[in-house]
Length: 435
Image 1 (cartoon, one colour):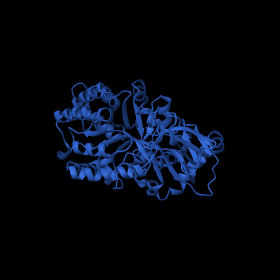
Image 2 (image 1 turned 30 degrees about the vertical axis):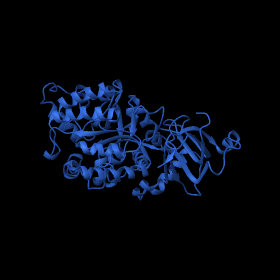
Image 3 (image 1 turned 45 degrees about the vertical axis):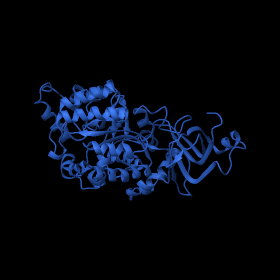
């Protein structure tokens, strides 16, 4: 790393470390080392410290002063469906009806390669602009759709094609052998960038889940699906599986996934709202992670599906890892700022203490990176990590007291115009290159 070029970025700096801790520099300098596209973070300092340490090295050509702006790490969105971009703001009443009425017909369009390519180009540009450079993505059932996503996506993502073999529209139903063969093919082509993705237990047969999970574990790929999003979903799942060989005495939704090989340290369970203590014990023992999607679970009048409030305290008491996700299109907006706002607002209304903006930022950045096994190279602005960061303008008269106050002043003014969160980020840097 000797003699590599340095670049100095000046702004207010936020560097999340945990649920309670976020490094804060009212006017700091992010020092980046290496050429754009390959750059790493050298150090994060106050402006006074940087001037002293790098005396004579900071000049007009290698220093960028963002003025009234905040630099923070780029986001990890740990659960979203890129193929549901067009149904984000469609009317929502219940999960299963919304899927049948809007989502499935939209996803069927991705059977056409030209359509998939066009949509992927547009969606992943919007995703970058919102400041998200990592996470876990659901595609449609179609091979060409996941190819388009893999080609256009920028950042540290795992992506999976949803698998649907039963209780699905004809246009979106695969045979068991088609699902297994495509899983083998995609793992061979994309390696650990591929995530084995049964849509959920309602649409994916035990045979496909078991065989696909075995292939994923063998190749060290992630596995992702949905778990206990609504009570109606849980009742339907249990009624289905209790009539299947080997599942007659199954007691919970989590048991179904346990018997199907879907749990483990590389497993991501979307939602996990209505989980019993015993189910959380199972998730904890298997080191399975849960992804909380507050904007999707929010009340219907807030453009969510009204699924309920995630009990993060119970989840943490049981030592289950969790991170935040947007759940596009159950969630209406791409920006993780909106997701963070929703997490804080819903818990405040319910008078649940501890749901701070600092916690939300950690769960939207470093927590996701750690779950994906990227915590040593990504997720915050610590030295030696990839120079992945975003720049967000803040008002000139903002009271920059601490990290919590800075985040509140970025997020709270836009509560009434949530679509504006998607345009809040002014610049995005990936490996030190402005993209």
